[in-house]
Length: 482
Length: 157
Image 1: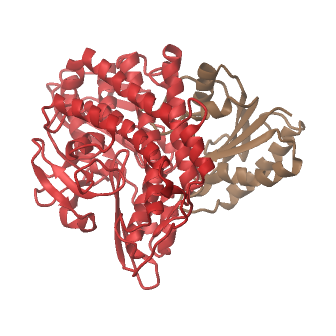
Image 2 (image 1 turned 180 degrees about the vertical axis):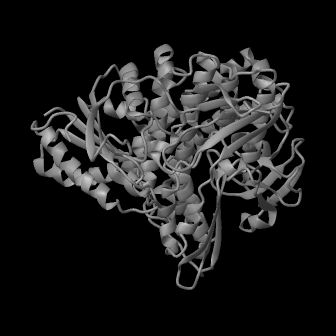
Image 3 (image 1 turned 90 degrees about the vertical axis):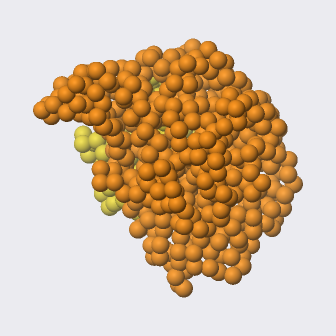
């Protein structure tokens, strides 16, 4: 059996690689996406005072610290007796929402302009060295400028709500430690063009149209790339609306049948199990009542637009209806439509940010609430990449005794593996050496899920590809390194 | 003195990866003391595309980062050229050369750009630096003060 290895190299712990096993007839016999999931953090926080967790968890990931910060804070809201999501003061909850939707805005715009748009506009088969935002800057300077400024705007929202770029302290158990002064609000609301929310919403709307134009001209490629049925899982608001910050757990199958019906996430471990497989450090979550074989699911933008009934903002709802019409209202199982879904979410995030900025509750001073302390709390949030679980238990000395985190990328472990398998069979069958289209296809398949591969330091985000092709005797016969 | 930005990056929750942020902490008091108004400070977990817009406003930019390169004993100041190659297949972080290249192409600005590499040793879940990294931080800080005052050259160690 021949073996192809695609191995990203990183500086510290946390990496992923793809192995593709070929049989003697050059057919794909087996594929695996290996990701080292570093769980040391869960042991590290044991014994620490619970109120430190929202800041400590930002050590976990320098890429999406806001998601971990808010998920931890939500879990600790339960522990301090402030309820599960809606127990906070209006200012507390809305400031957190503003922080979170600001993060969603910056993360989704970065993913689109830095990764997706270069693929679409410069071509999937163009030179990888320039298939990025710098390449865009040469050919489409206006788009590259938008990329930079949309990221910057989202970061500004986070800065005004979390307090600082590193180890932000905005969310605390039971609430928030600051409101949004009028002068900060006005910077975001009425800042000089283009850095104001109206321009950001317009640019987000333009990005959705850009994808649709691309799609209309490349429908066959987009629809046939790693298309496979799956279950879909996310939080939804109690009335079925899309909600990134809080809600109940819902899952639907590939046909839209509800297989998890709006349950309370405090009981998540009644519904979710994590399977350990000998060849992978990263676990494989699945719905317990369906079982390992068929209970796996997707999370993230594609899943969220499959589980929710509607989007509670005008422009995004209009785009959602067009998007849903494409699959006649049924769940969308097209891998590359994840980019389309992500852009509709980007637009929605912009609209929600504006709605929050216009809300006078953000200037009020009632920031924190506390009640009767409990010893266990679970916090869930829809991070840009999908559902993020934080679960803490404490003792009578207020020390953390248990921490369990299920990150978005772990939730997407099985679908990412299936996507790699799909493209490998399509691109590698009959090939005796690594081809550029094959490498691109594997990258595109994984990238659609926007995985965050244990990126606890900045260096971990750097992911050069190392591809090795082994013959039947285990000898390297081809080697590619980006 | 040229209008200068000193920008540390890394995760201070991961032991020596926090060298960049710790360096900015050291700089804060010194920058206030010299009071030229020509030096600004910033820091973040990692670099990303919006940093192209930030550096466009300066004549000189000095990024400060932890390094595990064998050839560096304690620190090294390296001049950086624009680099349009992208090594990440995912996303999440970009290089100094990438940020500079983006700055040049979008904003048509060409700040002199350097990285002050400070030797790092361990990346555990600890806020404190290793003693060796702490020592390297201090000598690198003294070097940069001399450099910005015109008494040291690039690549000194």
